[in-house]
Amino acid sequence: MKTGTHTDKSKIRATLLPLAENCPVDKANPEDCPLHSLRKLPPAQRLEWIAALKEEDLTYLASYCHVCMNLKMGERAELATT
Image 1 (cartoon, rainbow, N blue to C red):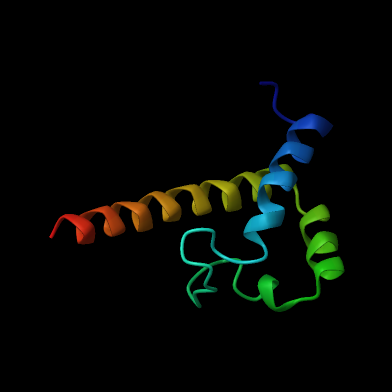
Image 2 (cartoon, helix red, strand yellow):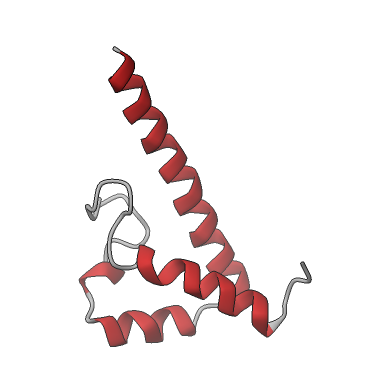
């Protein structure tokens, strides 16, 4: 995938939009999440905020959420086996 293209940014933004509503793992809004304050905004403002981000910032947030989700899912799996 080429980086820096409009398509890349659009794909990353599309990934972040549902994450801007709540955490998909537990439907919460943890205070330590970088999207915490964003989730308190009305949907139109969240969309504006995400649209204004540079690709590197979009990538950082998507990566952060990916790692966080994997950690939470790992914790859930661990709890289920104990």
